[in-house]
Image 1 (spheres, rainbow, N blue to C red):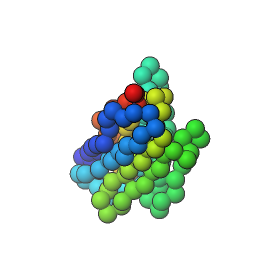
Image 2: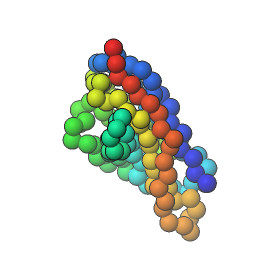
Image 3: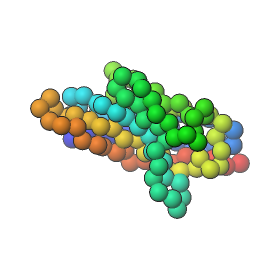
Image 4: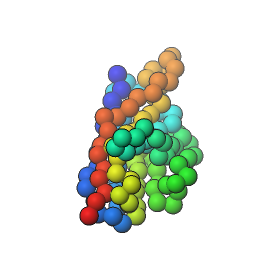
Length: 121
């Protein structure tokens, strides 16, 4: 079994910054892509950013320049640095990961429980 645990959410004023972390644990042979999604109130879940095991990144066009995704493969952890936050960034942020649990198995997608980010004055 694989668990993803997010941390770092909270309340921040417009223009502020937050750093989210997501640590994977459990039966892990290899982690392929990791990513962050968000779900604003009343809207569908959307991609924020993703990062491959080799460090290649992909961002939602509207977030380029303000958000930065990174990962520490030794710690099985992915990060999301969010700067110049706006009220419209308010959402529940979820991490996910494509994990190969054992050397003889294929990859499966796992999700964290989500962390609330609220941008408000």
